[in-house]
Length: 109
Image 1: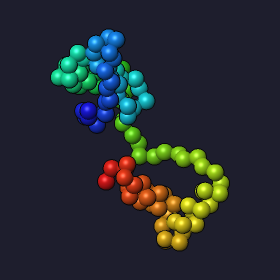
Image 2 (image 1 turned 90 degrees about the horizontal axis):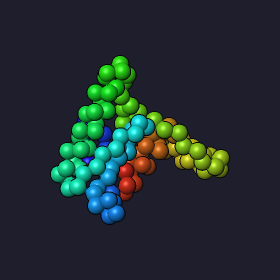
Image 3 (image 1 turned 45 degrees about the vertical axis):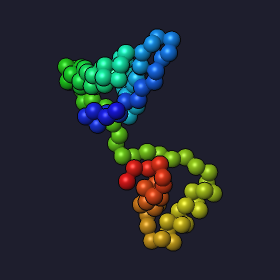
């Protein structure tokens, strides 16, 4: 589920007989629950709104879903191979990696 740029995932808790969910693309903890899919969706949107209102009441900026930057740690030999491949293609390491991620089956276009 997506609402105002925040993405939520949910699971069915068989023991409790309800869906429980959390927003996954922020460092802050935002949770929600519902007994039906419609109730779950409403609770998700309400939780995001509550979070945004809470931040506003404190004069804080809400955590944005993602900044667009991340650090990758890899073995030095892999780093060297990827950097050389990027150079051979005439690209920066960043542009090369972003291009490869976009081309993968799991990355959005």
